[in-house]
Image 1 (cartoon, chains in turn purple, cyan):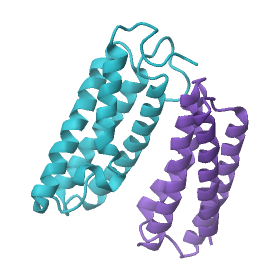
Image 2 (image 1 turned 120 degrees about the vertical axis):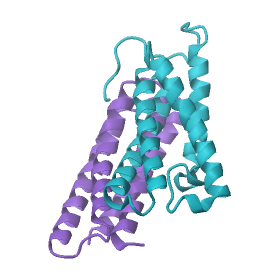
Image 3 (image 1 turned 45 degrees about the vertical axis):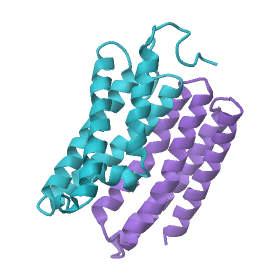
Length: 119
Length: 146
């Protein structure tokens, strides 16, 4: 039930990475709008994790619980920490940091699905 | 580790900010992975899992040292980043030459192939960045703020 949300988060992450990548390529720093977009990703992520937790409590849980919830916690922190780290830098490099962070979130969604299904 | 460090943080600004971000991701990934491995399955592959733990620790130190970037943190960063370069080359070679030693993969196995070879590239970028920011220490050094 939570995997479609993981796909949404992954796509939003790629989208945010693309936006930040464009700003990096055109030599511009991270802007507030991008932080708001990151907030949207976080919100969907939060819903996703709640759905996954409810599913787990009902008996349909991850194949490897420790790894899954470790990834889940990590995913939640990546964007806020990276955004704070990036926003302090008013150069194109802040945009590159956001690219790294957003792609990390997307990649972690893939890993979470893998760990859940045990593939 | 959020927020800007006070004063001039030579390795933490410009491209260094990206370097620290990538280091941070790798440090968290390696720490978490090795923690699960060591706490749960240490008996299965003791050498591999303890090496994962060491690698994770080195990445954590490198991340903090590069994020600080000044004063005594610079030599600390040099040591940590050099250790990584040696680690990934040594363990990478060993894992190819004597795979029997490693019952399971570490961050450094196969020259970091499990992590998109980021562990192989990163220490050399780190060393290059440390070298570049160390030279002269003038504002004209690495990428000026744009």
